[in-house]
Image 1 (cartoon, rainbow over the protein chains, first blue to last red):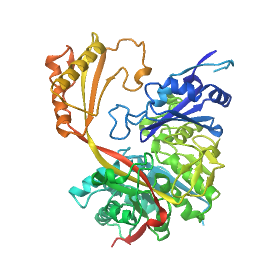
Image 2 (cartoon, rainbow over the protein chains, first blue to last red):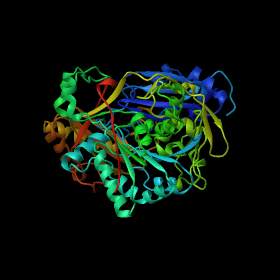
Image 3 (cartoon, each protein chain N blue to C red):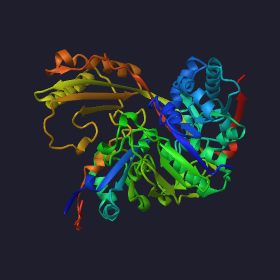
Image 4 (cartoon, each protein chain N blue to C red):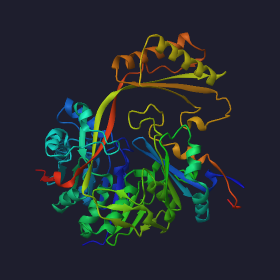
Length: 109
Length: 454
């Protein structure tokens, strides 16, 4: 089935230099394995093609049912150098939550 | 020795809700209040202010705020810790002493933490082998040395602990870590040792939760923002810390906002890198070890935190002048708002090119369409109106200034139904670029001065 990430997760994003971080948190414990399995570095990098120019890293925080993504080179130089309206990556979280995932499992939202 | 203290978060950044600190010290019991004022570029703004006036260079909001809360904190014996001293903590202290005198408060003890400002000793440090190369890019400091505008060492909790041990009721620091402001009262009250890594990490995690104010208690909450009650009167977060290292995050009764597992999780994930190595001067906290439990209404228990030894280095945050930017906007209305905004951008770029202006970057965004999600925005309905937002960046002040003169003419010489130019020509502003570095801890000593008002 196809699930919208926003239906199974919530998120917050921020900046460190030219890197945006996006914390993605499962809304229920049973959704966390789905994030681990389907929200891969490859898929996220493809989603942020044209936004994150310096690669994507992923870290797991199972206790918090969360993944932390670093989107390198995503803030137009970062800090006061950036010409972006969202120079601090505050809306990268909602950009992440736009994703749709094709999953094998059937989930009850 | 106390076994539990309540630490309130009063400010999450310079520009935060001005009523929050007063609410925190009046709407319920607290023992300490921390206020974070410093972001990466804040110090350079403060250096600029101090250059113009040697009695400035700190968060000026702090003075009227202290005037309001001083009588309360003195009466209730609440201790306040803030890094709002910026690049001039001593002047900040003196201003607070003047407020105390005006209010008739005698015997107020204020501690200042000094020594983090190394702007005037960069060359001396270099001769001692402290090179301060860029820790992210490896570049040599020499390349930007003559453009450096501020240079500060991130101190941790220990100098603040020293000021608290000497009896300071108010502690004013410069570049102390946000987390250190919260960790310090725990070390002071509970007598935690410098190598008690798990407890230091627990206090650091509590500090991370408090350091952004209302962002832990219902602000900017993506899981379900509609479910947050009364954001207008949001209660800022409070950490109930126990000597064991367990912490409960809560807020005052009868305030708005929400403290839940989800609000706390969102804040824990905010602005972190590798979660197993959250590096501070005090310890390296492992955010993957954090455990949360529901502890009743608006109460979340944080426990199980593990820490690792601190490193041998302080982080140094420097800023340097790196050219100029200017950003301007125009608003286009129906019909064909987006198409007209795009056409106007094309006209503007042709004109900039025809007069031979060179920039390192020109960036166009369409606010109302794609300024947040960029290329992710596809196949959307035509918006009724679009804000054309164009920015340029370059080293040549004149070129950046001239760009500002090319935007307004589009009103009379571009596509129709255009407005929104009341602000005048976009002015060049300085780019204050960030230069992170490391320095050995043994190369510098923080200084703590505690004085009492007469």
